[in-house]
Length: 213
Image 1: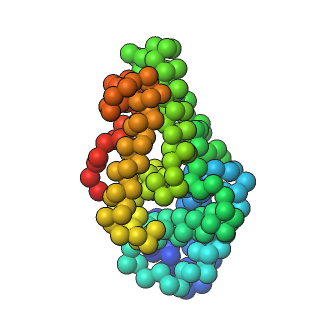
Image 2: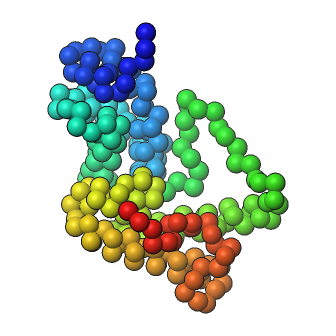
Image 3: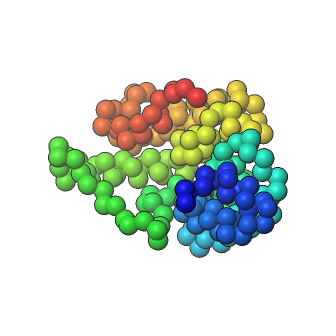
């Protein structure tokens, strides 16, 4: 029997097919958990919220019409629930874990250095990663949100604007200013005095560049 697409399973679940819903949960529970963990920064909270997400999916499934891919619909629902949780508890929003979240369904993958990267290079790269992590966490909340939604959750400017109920131009401005702040912090951490991050600070990658939507 061919594997059903997410949308087909969703429509089956709408008709009361509990196995179809269980298949959707099994298929996407890992992704939902990882998204929540990246937002809330806590393994236990992410696990608890994942259960709430799928409970909300079950209750909201009747409203799913297939206008968007099921994964898009689920991702939007997951982020909305996570942001509501953060606002309700007034916690520090949008954590960026240094390490990937534990995933019982996947074997851990070791980070292997390239053949041209020695121990000192690897240690330096990890140090710069920590610097970037710290710099993002210290951004003002409005800036931190757009950075994480755009660069870590891969949402477009338009999607972020809809999520945060703000004009697209406001999102663009916040992201531009956030990049300037990150560049300044990382430059100072590298010991530079100018407005450009030295070549060695390339860990920030496109995050420090004025990329397109």
